[in-house]
Image 1: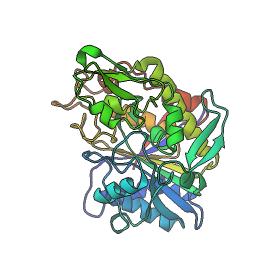
Image 2: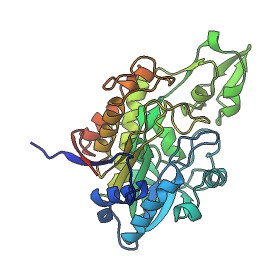
Image 3: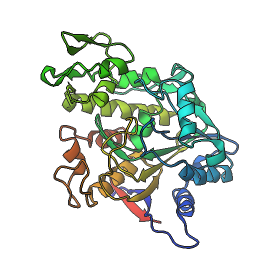
Image 4: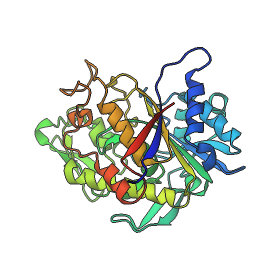
Amino acid sequence: MKARSRVYFSDLRTKSGVNLYQKLALLFDRAGFAEVIEDKGLTGIKLHFGERGGSAFIRPIFIRPIVEKVKEAGGKPFLVDTNTLYTGSRSNSYDHLLLAAEHGFNPVVTGAPLLIGDGLRGQSYQEVEIDGNHIKVAYIASDIAYCDSLIGVAHFKLHLGVGFGGAIKNIGMGCASIAGKLAQHSNVRPRIKGKSCTGCRKCVDYCLPKAIEIREGKAFILEERCTGCGECISVCPTGAVRVRWDAASRDLQERLVEYLWAVTKGKKGRIGYINFLLNITPDCDCFDHSDAPLVPDIGILASRDPVAIDQASVDLFNGSQGLENSALKESLSPGEDKIRDIYPEIDYGNQLTYGEKLGLGKRKYELVRV
């Protein structure tokens, strides 16, 4: 029988002398993250700074203990994210860094400088060759491709395109340049349900490639310009913008897993993963709002296996009691599939199965309580 991957878990219970920051440091140690840090090595801490209007992103004070542990291990840590495919507060480095500062991500709070890994407009990348079913050349943000080690710090939450976002998505999607994100979304093409469209123009205003126009009072998508970023889906107030997520989601999940593969290709043994299971919302942190949490806060996970940590996160989430007055429709009881309750058309397990198939990790894991 093959050994299971270890996933280290800390709940949120604390007492005098054992606070949550100390538990984070202990997770870092138990997961063996000091081994992934090179002496004097530049170490990226990949996270999401949140979107303007959102509030569920990881609090910057939780990043400080991780930064201090990287320094203790001999590394030179920096916080890093990449620019977005959609318009908003993070589509270029200038606005992105201002937003990060607004949300408290600065050297005074976190103890580390900030970089936007793919340059001013998302066009700074390194080509990485892989032999994926979908991706042959991945476009990885330069500062991430060139750093010596990487610690992925993800806020686990649900996601309209892939079911959930955790360690795999944080690295696979989050380390891609604009060109890489475009490649991952290449077959995600929205459609307009005419009866629901009011012609409010919100999708037009948010569409960066100008792929939507109003015709006869209804939104119309110009498919030759559409990048498949999904911004129109997230901003439509009436739900008129739809995607056929069955096949589209499967391919999107496989593409982001292949991008994870590309990131790990040059950093074998030099990546660690941390998932925060706090404020688990039905939408990605890229939205301009954060809905009520679906379950009570669960805890924090750490592992060197991205597949195992995401599988454990899914299991802990689905195993929790759902909260009343949340977006959950039926699956409130522990053990019910809450991800399928929110996104019934998405087989979110594809990213886990494909990650295991590519040898990036194991779905079977041992949960070690810290």
